[in-house]
Length: 100
Image (cartoon, rainbow, N blue to C red; front, side, top):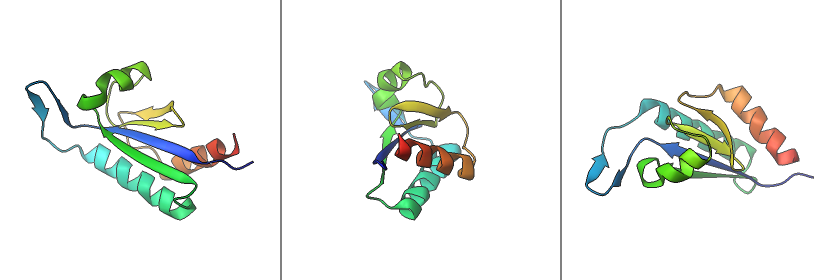
């Protein structure tokens, strides 16, 4: 059975109280572009990509085990953090998640 996969990426950015992150993160940008490209390739009806600013959702990310951006979750489980994943490995992980 093939199911829909949700990829969540916590990227560097956001704000908390008076603190605001305004710098860009190259690794985060690459990860988001890669995830969206894979979703486009596999079909957007099968793969949903959600991007969240890390500082706005830091407790949520920490509870999932992620502390260094970019934090990538596949169906709510941590796939990687702190690095840009290899495209083919990332794609294979998404395909495996579809089979679950």
